[in-house]
Image 1 (cartoon, helix red, strand yellow):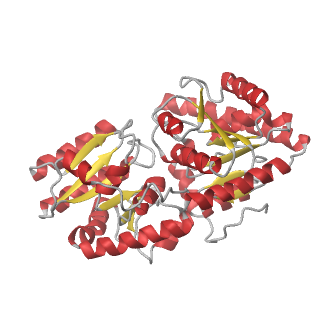
Image 2 (tube, rainbow, N blue to C red):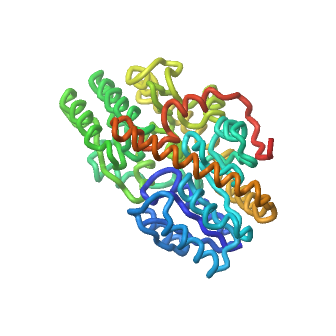
Image 3 (tube, rainbow, N blue to C red):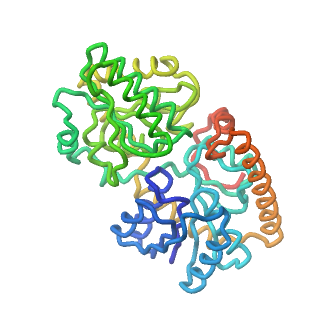
Length: 426
């Protein structure tokens, strides 16, 4: 097959990193993969992996008539067999441009915490958690596959050297490093980052030799830097360090003794054999253990509201303290985390399942009347969403990503408890 993979952005982040890694793994199964995207830090990784990259403008409308036209010409000129869009703008643009051609199927992946209500329901989808899958099926999507965020366990492994990273940032041998490696943005991330600054500061005040390393960049950097400075001033030494964005963060994962995070970043930390504390919003944090693992396998590597230890920075401190105190516990839970990733989140297994979905999409054909009705519903819903966002922007209450809005995420997390991995139609 000749496949076009179209990530929604190319900044460092979970969905787009998954898109590139999975594209490479599918390519390694004997297919030709072209990556269509805006410029960004991950483009170099695409080229380093030996895949072709075609650029589209970063400053554009979404959906973009220019991009739709370019995608149609690319598919026609290169005889593309299938287009895979990640998140709603690429999925919508691909279906608008290619839906009625019927020779070029479109598939989609949504790694946000919910599926946008206007997203086309005729496009085969992959989502990252069972609860999101069930919610999408209940909303009328005709085929939804559970494809948990894959991890390249060959590249991300405990043998990667982290000593140079520790030396670069002046980390002493007896310091326990807590690492958070993520985008510094308001949605999903900010609350956990601020809580970690406070929790590590409190541990340091209590005499623990601990340091928090935050790797990443984004809109919330100044807010986080202010909280880090407050913790450092209170303790009287640097206990929170912001490194900025690092194109290849593997040395940071390797240098860590403990990881704190959510989503794909949490899984990557696990692949390095690090114990994990999962953070979310509304005060959520929870240590990954054999007892808590089923919760995350069901709802994803995220949470809302109190965990077993309570809320906010105090709960996060309680989760971190025994890890900081005990090397044996870190090794035990780190080994458990690595084994869980190997068994359930392998990139090779994900590539095989994704390939199967590609073959299904090529063989399956949606009736024109159903497709037309779906596109009409999609464009009407998208228009309503854009009008609402303009109104919220005017009021100053807009969320950057509607699919990660707390009310929507809470509704998804309140879904059923089935652990089925089925991707069949209801």
